[in-house]
Length: 240
Image 1 (cartoon, rainbow, N blue to C red):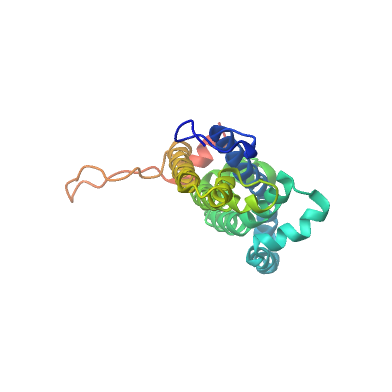
Image 2: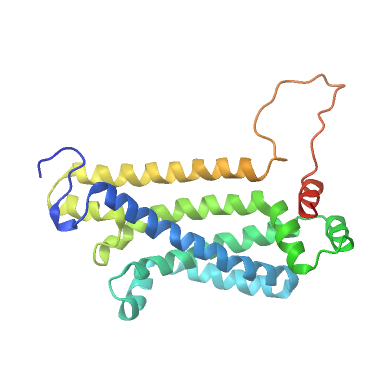
C-alpha cells in the first residue's frame, strides 16, 4: 500500500487517474444519451400537450426505482459491464431533461414562432434554430442537474464488478481499512461534480450572450439599460 497518496490497490487493475477517466465516462455518456433521447420526446410533448402528463409520470416513476433494483433487472442481460451502470443513469436523466426542454420551448413567444414561419422556416428548422436556442438557458440548467447527479450516482456501480469509477475506492477502503482511499473517492467525485458544473456555467455564458452575466455597474435611475431581446437575437441568428 506504499507509493504515495494517490497509490491504489492492485486488485482494481487501474491507476487513480484511470479511475477518474472511467468515472467520467460512466457519468457523461448516459447524460449525453439522455439528452439526445429527451429532445424528440420533449418536442412530441410540446406538439401534443395531452402526451406531456403521462410522459412526465412515467419518467418520474422510473426515477423512483432504486439503482440497485435496476442492476438486478439488467445484470442478466448486460452482465457486470459498464452498460449495467449507464442505462439507469440515462433513464434517470430523462426526468430532468424532458421538463427542462418542454418548459424552455414553451417559453418561446408565439409572435417569434409566427415570424420564423413567415421567414420560411419549417417545423424542424424552427425547432432547432429558434426554439432550442431560446430554450438553451433552461436546457443547460437541466444539464447541470443531470450531470452532477450522474457523477454522484456512478459510485453505486462499485457493487457490480468494480464498475463504479472512483466509487471502487470506497469498497477497497473498507476492505483494507484505508481511510485514505475513502477520501480519494469522496473528494475526487466532489471535485469532478464541481468542475463539470462550472464548465456548464461557462457554456451557458458562451451560447446565451443575451443573458445577464452578473452584477454590473450601477446606472442612473433615469438611464435605463438596453438589453437585447432573447427571442429576437435567436431569430436573427436563425435566418443568417
